Length: 182
Ligand code: IMP
Ligand code: MG
Image 1 (cartoon, protein in one colour):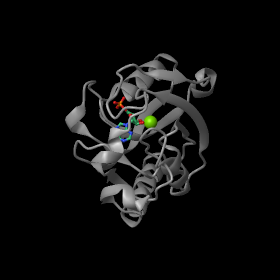
Image 2: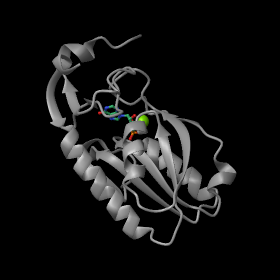
Image 3: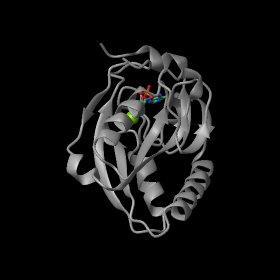
Image 4: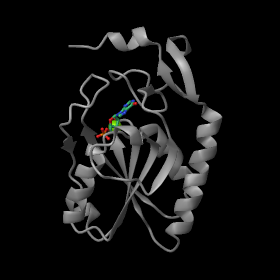
């Protein structure tokens, strides 16, 4: 996979260091509580697995699926959610765990929906933030790295469902992005 990359933006050691810091921060902020961490699949799965082990608190875990991209590198703008968390989030301190906030539409949609469903508190933890592309007014409470407006893959993030298992975060060579399915 390395040979498909134009650049490595964040390597595994840098990511690991930052994820540990985020875990420490969450541990301090939620001391005495049992937060419910919600993994937004599929992109957050690798980050989520590392983050939860960096949090030294009793936590519970839930999973939901959101998609707004299809197979392109530009968001379709339409957010699709698959989740049955309604009663599980009621009265809980919820932390939504995202891989990246881009236009902000996904997280804005999920946030608004969860707030209507009676969470006790709601915060967003995103590994990456691409503020240049924001369409919806949303900000994460915890951000790993702020990155420039480039389409990145690896550490859970995909292009056309590929490269999620690449251990670093990088930008593909331009010709790799050309083969967009359908
Ligand atoms: P938003 O709704 O535009 O904020 O999009 C968020 C979702 O789009 C993320 O959860 C990712 O799945 C996907 N996404 C946005 N930017 C990238 C990227 O650079 N690489 C891979 N996926 C991305
Ligand atoms: Mg995603």
